[in-house]
Image (cartoon, rainbow, N blue to C red):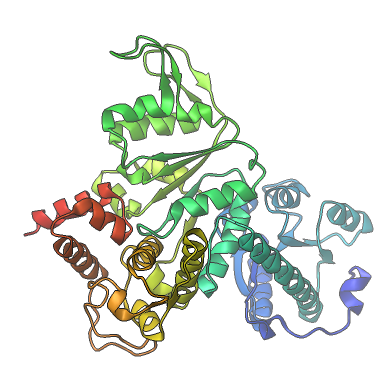
Length: 470
């Protein structure tokens, strides 16, 4: 005879989860394959994205690395204590709803699970209709809380939540991932092209988490002189080298209790990668010229525009450091993948500049169409610099297509929903934009880098790569 807590059986019918535009992610954790597959089939029919795990270790790994909304958890897993996994899930991810399953229908188990934060409890053996009712109810609950959370995130965004702007679905997903990443202390690898706002995302993670009142220390690994990176990161003692007139703490020590953001971490030399890995594993550093280890307590956020998996395969990036940094990963979509945000971003930049200068500007409809048609290899940074240049150079209130840089008008305006006859590789478009900008500026590389929205180090690296293939 099936026994369960009363609310699970007598709950009134609720519209299915699949009526919602946002599918929920369910993880089914049970060592019985038949139970896993039956629950997956029932959940999929309701509109869940269902995945499974057969052990506590596998379950926790999936929860830490994927977006999970609901966990259907067997309390009697053979590789863990009765309530240990439930306790760990709620500790790491308080927003995840857990439905506890047990072969024991005793009230005591239910009470213990609920006290630890379980949403509800269901006893084996249970019928699929009973499971469906429970999943419908938790789905409806999550839809309400998800809307409240999204509203809160938008309010935070309008108040300077990382200063990020965007209404595209890709940005909504990014905001959710930032919110989850902010509540943990695990390393995060932020992936994105130059100019997408990787440091902005890192600051949002830091400012939204429990360490927001601690230091946030950015380190541009691509711009540091290789011979100075070690002393910058780990510090040095007096007399360690010529010019070391006094001891200086490293950036990893300065950020004690807070966050270190390693921008362009893929540019670190291999020998420094090994020392950084040891520092992260041992949670201690040795300043240059010192024989003593100094303990550190920092959270690491790293970012790169390189394909680190490819770099690992080529031997230019350590595999063990890659796995150490890639506990959680966030991908920032390039601007060409969220074109609907271009007018919103451009308008925001113009309003900010207008407030600062006291002059009012506005984009014409034709100018907006031109901005939408351009691929923006320098992403948001390039768009911001383009708008800034137009506002500075234009004396009138309206910015027309004639006011836009010529390299943006270098191809016919294409409707945003129109399928092109040919698609050029992104690398070719980027190369054309860089070389075209330098030609227009008569070889002024620094100004070209600024207008393109990329760093000078990145520009010189790409130019060197272009020369090597000629």
